[in-house]
Length: 143
Image 1 (cartoon, rainbow, N blue to C red):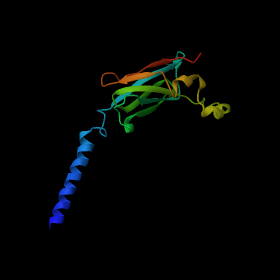
Image 2: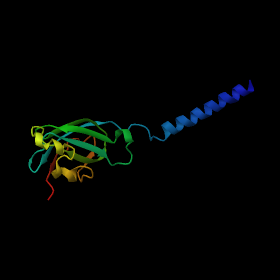
Image 3: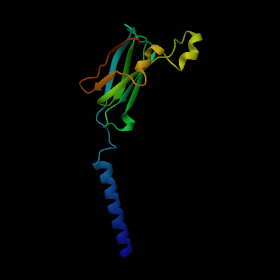
Image 4: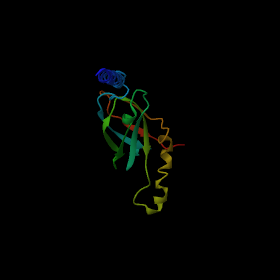
């Protein structure tokens, strides 16, 4: 009987500690309420058509599962992402070749070379909040 009580007591202590770590530290929870983000992208003054946009959190307090959101950009340069958590983001752009030009299919993996500076280490930033959800960007090709 004494062994059973000690085992039960130890289980309670372990469970209490584990719950305190999971709940009390806040490192695993949601970073807030997501917002819908939208905008328009122009490239050299024209709508950036048939491309993709990605928002990668650069804020340290965003858990990994909430750090990236992406969307396709339509033929008019518009995009919409349903669920982006308030934080500061690096905004990246990528565009494959024109799907109607079969000769360019080989270059699809590389994407549009003129957008290179807006891909992996893009200088574009968006500080998303409940009050700031529209992000338009006018980008220009590299010199």
